[in-house]
Image 1: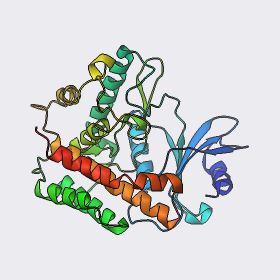
Image 2: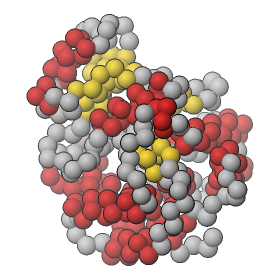
Image 3: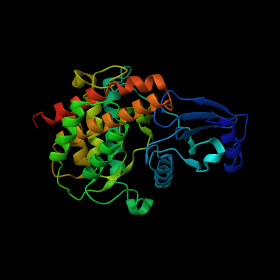
Image 4: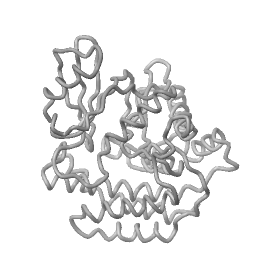
Length: 337
């Protein structure tokens, strides 16, 4: 991406934006390349679409910009936005700029350097943050048309199945079986329609390192209107993964000793905060989250093979996990409630 061209535009569009500008590409942002722009006055973050041929509707940084702008105006913990460039002639791709928010980011949900009390507070803040997202007033934020009507999981299953097929590089039997199970076990539409983050994980959140409060919710690329349990399913899916840098899960962890709530405790607290009559059965929602992540990783692999991934080596490594995620979804689908 032509960062110099982008910064020239930003100088004309953002009050107080002036160089010299130092741009550093972050290690995250596998889907949408992300840069920290440091000026003499302050820091900004630039998020862009990747260069090259892309799948239709993927890498929707314009949707990210819209939802961040709306939520910041309503006081939710998201960065302030400044400018969206839809003119691809400027840098070769679409991009937007937002505030750089200070905060602690945790890639490992075990929170190894924290006390049990700190961990409990962080997980409580994360739970409350998810409830706040799902309680957003869609009319007040102007997001009533941010997603399509109808059965959310039926739409999402169709969308991600199509994305998977379009980026498929070989037959994966477990993925075919998981798609078939999901198609045969779609929950009835219960009428719940909320803002859905789409990738609710602890590593997409920033926390105050002293108070453990939630400073910012990041990475809204997959956000839409839909069923709130999609976000909860994604979080529980992540926790069922192995511990460590790659899995970033809680598999086999003594959560009680660490001050981390169990799945059941976390879901029950969420249900209480949202006023639900009882905690929901999460099997379908977790299995669906495994499927969707497998489809996303297949897309990452395809971009790596096509030569337009943000990090080609990492793309191929992530792509090798598609079958494992598909099998994880099947295991959850067949688990007892």
